[in-house]
Image (tube, rainbow, N blue to C red; front, top):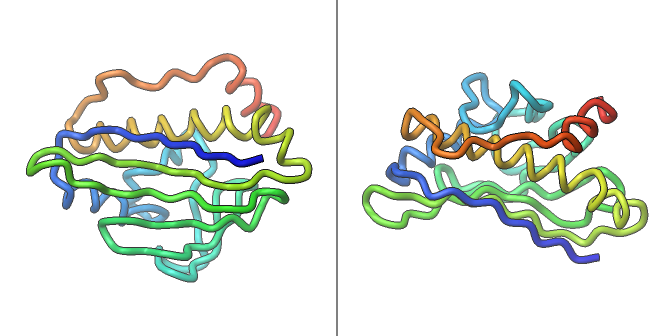
Length: 160
């Protein structure tokens, strides 16, 4: 099963400011990942190509990193996740930047059922909260904060 999942937010900020959020991923001052409500993103070394880690049961290796512009993570787990996810910073004009997260993979084996029933709802909620953090960091407010539904709340309890 082919999966292509995109989340993006237009931010009233320069690409440099949004890029700094990207570069903070998994660090002590991570301002992008929603680590207060989700398993933190952790690696065996600082963010960069070859770093191995993930968040919770989702495991990956950093296979591409252009500071302040793009980071790609290639899945190593869970089983059946064959592909990648990545953050990209795209300048729109001098004062606006698009922060995009793309997940592209082939779900095979148990992931063919697990992705739509468990992982996608959790992924979507986590990514929207990440984009909320980016908007808050860039503008001081979030126009339309993400709200976790009952199903996501139930899944979070079960996955813990």
